[in-house]
Length: 377
Image 1 (cartoon, rainbow, N blue to C red):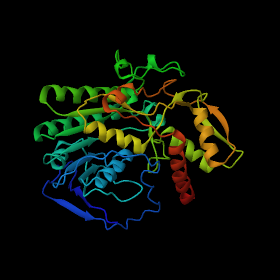
Image 2 (image 1 turned 30 degrees about the horizontal axis):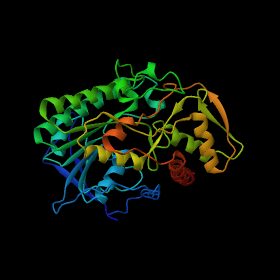
Image 3 (image 1 turned 180 degrees about the horizontal axis):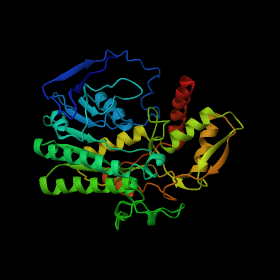
Image 4 (image 1 turned 90 degrees about the vertical axis):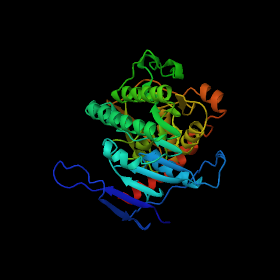
């Protein structure tokens, strides 16, 4: 399969501004040297919504298209018949992009944004951000970068959406915006959308996402943009980060168990009794496109209500792997004690909610990560 055109802005000389007329076109023929197989599309086999089509091909822009969620969304939009442009600092790590046009560019720069958002798009999806798992977010070492870079990207993107009359704008927020005081009880966290204030996120990442929400809502009120905001709850699946410090808990645990032999012990941060829910990537995409094409602005949770402890998550992955795995609880970043998606609002507004079992998504993810571990040895 051939991927689309990949473009990179040329910059010459120390501190030079990009020459917007000098674009280097690099065309990948589909034989990019990827060792890893492409993950199966929609392995959970749930019913994707069918949206009306027309003879005119619609255009979508995916910001952050080199990342986990963004690259999966590009693939989903292409299946629906969209012409898709992607933009990111990097190409997708585990396979060629399926975007018709992919721009390697830095959305922190206004000139790059002007080059990328160069006309009206039917839909724009904004995932571009500086983020990662607990090992990245909760150290405090990257707080200034997380807030500064993500705020710049959102300010640049939303202003051009206003200027160019982009019809539908999706912004990916996070469950990390919810206040710490409502997530102290691991058995009964409170994460309904109307509990976000008084605000008290547990990280600067959460504060930055809360600012982003208010920014997109303000542009909706003052400029009439059709913005739509989702608060994601721990999205996971194949072709996501699985090593290096930015991976989320499901990927980290799958990797540790894939490396381990039956009877081994793996390290777990904290006592393992902290609770979370995890949402498989395909259902994340389903909720995202349903929200973007609805009349509802949000913010709304997109997540699973199947809450587990981290200890239970380890046991579940170990069972999938067919291994006996012990747990060594060590000091490390834990985040809040409990977090679970509250899906009452999404049920009411979209007449939809995620229904896939956590185990089904973990089976697909573990198989993929096991292949990565095997290939990296």
